[in-house]
Every structure is written in structure tokens, then in C-alpha cells.
Image 1: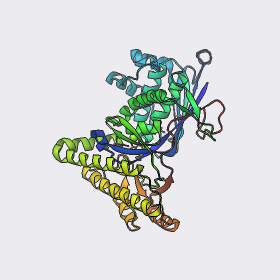
Image 2: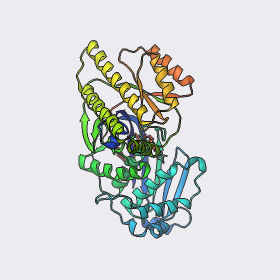
Image 3: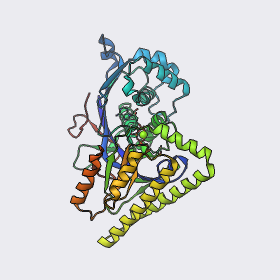
Image 4: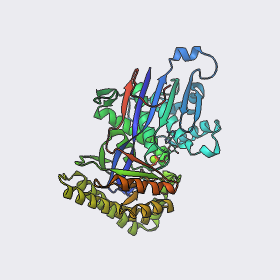
Length: 405
Ligand SMILES: Nc1ncnc2c1ncn2[C@@H]1O[C@H](COP(=O)(O)OP(=O)(O)OP(=O)(O)O)[C@@H](O)[C@H]1O
Ligand SMILES: C[C@@](O)(CCO)CC(=O)[O-]
Ligand SMILES: [Mg+2]
């Protein structure tokens, strides 16, 4: 049996970091995906084969170009009781003992120093696989992604959502109920998505430490959402929101940035509470503006001007939180020369920056600003905003553009 799924990355239009402290945030899915294909090997076949791969859980990460294999017997021995297949039951968090056992399993593999940041993703993988399917189900998983990793576009969430979606489908805990017209993709129902989202959140906790849950929610459900304290409101954007994304290519780590903001909040509780409160107001206002129907050029221009101003204010507050970076400031200054407004997206500290592209902006100006940004060594791309969340294609599926097992 082979399952193929994909889960989107995201942009955050307003509210990152403050959302971890209870403020509202607005996020949307983008048309860049992490794809995951999973093939369960039958126990008989796996046991009957001798040599490498027999009776093992294998993971092939195409983008960093690394492959791993853990014999099922070793997983059972290391994880013992933490290893009951719970796929159909309520998602449970990774206990400290389980995490320590997973870390020991990873130490048995030589991960190159330059790719040590992958350990968090590998830990989430081992936790999700063994928690959902148990330790004695041999299988092979291949992951490939359009998303730059560790850049603010939700690569960790897309990884956890696609993995949870594939594993839960293989476990028979969830199943697609409808197709996306004109494509080979199928969608899950609300309850199934909720189960996937809860498992993915447990994976995100391993990677992020203290995630708000917004990234896994938008990757699971898609669309544009307002998210506050775990509660989700779907936003109907009446006009397309066009964003240019600039990847500064400055690597950073969400877990460390989130921890840094929390430390600043404990040093200056009153000041930071005011900052988070201001971000909450910005997200609330931005979410209502997104839903306003603008039918003519004047209305659209005025709507875009309001969105731009709110993004600019949010960027100022992100700077107050200490998560901007000189590369982000360079993007802001460059786009401002063209009267365009930008803000960081995701955890900041480098990574990606959003620039609002007004409907009336000429292609010529867009090309000029892109060329100037790229002259700094940054990478620009345009994305579609607000598409589908988790999708599955079972059987022989030509729509799957990831790598297959
Ligand atoms: N395709 C993948 N394969 C393996 N691990 C991945 C993959 N995508 C993400 N990860 C894991 O997630 C980590 C990056 O997560 P991190 O939260 O720091 O950045 P992000 O999710 O891209 O940005 P943000 O959280 O700001 O949106 C990587 O270091 C790796 O451990
Ligand atoms: C920085 C943060 O707010 C968004 C990361 O995309 C972290 C989170 O909400 O989990
Ligand atoms: Mg992340």
C-alpha cells in the first residue's frame, strides 16, 4: 500500500510571535508544498527478506539528500512502552523519556555537522511514526519539499502535517472524502483534519518547543485564517492578496527565536504585554479589512493602503520583540524605494520577508524591485495565497509531484 500526500507552507500576514502569547494572528496557505509518500511493507515480506531494509523503518529526505533506516527490533527495544500504535486514538505528547530515547536512536546515525538542524525534524518523524503505527510496522517514507527549510514559510509544520496525514491514512484512521475538481487530489473531512492537526501539533512541539499551533493549523486546513489561542476563523478574502516573498537566505531557527521573545517578555513584562496587545489589534483589524468587498479601483487601492500600513506597524513591533535582522532591514529599505511595504514573515531573524504587491503595480516596477532584491543575493518568488490544505492522492496518481517510494 502506498499513500501520497502533500501539505502547504504558509505566510503570516500579521501576528507572529505575539500569537504564542495569546494575541490574534492572520496566516494563509501558499502553493509551495511538502510532499510525502509512504509505503508500508508487509510484515511477512519484510521478515522474509534478509539484509538491509528488512523489517526496518526507512526515511529518505530528498532535499538534504540524506537517508536513514531504523530496524524495527531496535525501535521496540529503545522505545519500549512508548511504542503502542495510537493512530486512531487521542494524540498524546512526546514524553521527556520518549524524547531522550529518540535522541539516543539518532546518535546512532552520523548526521553531518552541517545538517545537524535536521535532528529536530528526525525526532518529530520518529515520534509520529512510532506513535501512530507502532514500532513493528516496517515502512518506507520519502519526503521532498518546495519550501526552503528554516526560512519562515512553515517548513516544519508542512513536514509534520504531511507526515501525520500519510501515517494516519496508512493506519486507516482517516480517509479522503472528496476530490479537488480538475486535479487528482482528494480532501479529508473536518474530523479527520482535526486528528491530523492534533498529531502534527505534537510534532511541531518537538521542533519548535512552544508553538502556538498556527502553522500546523493553516497547513492542515488551508485557506486564510485568523488564529487566536487555538481558535480558528476562516477568512473569506474578497480580493486576491498578492505578495512577493524574498528569502534573505539567512538561516535561523524558530525554536531559538520564540524562546528569545519569551525571555524578553519575562524581562519586561508590562512593555511586552503592550506590544502583544498592539499586535492583537493589528491582526483583528487586518482580518476585517481582508474580508471587505472592494469592487472598484478606488476601493481596492484604499483597502491595500490599509493592509500595507498595518503590515508596516506590525514590522515595527516585531523589531521591538528583537526578531528583525540586518538582511530583513535591507529588504525593507529596498522595497520602500519603490513605495512598497514589507514585513518579515514567520519567526524572523533572517528567513523570508513579505512585500505587498498592489493590484495596480506595473510588471516593470515589480521586475525592477525583484532585480534589486536579487542583486543583494536574496531569492524572490511570487506565490498564490489561500489555497487548499492537506491533500492526498492514493494509488497511481499523476498529480503527485513529489518523489515516490
Ligand atoms: N522536508 C523536511 N525534511 C526534514 N526536516 C524538515 C523538513 N522541513 C522542515 N524540517 C525540520 O524543521 C526545521 C525547520 O523548522 P523551523 O520551524 O525552524 O523553520 P520553518 O518552519 O521553516 O519556519 P517558521 O517556523 O518560521 O515558519 C528543520 O531544521 C528540520 O529539522
Ligand atoms: C514565530 C511563530 O509565531 C510563527 C512561526 O511561523 C511561532 C508560532 O506561532 O508557533
Ligand atoms: Mg516552523
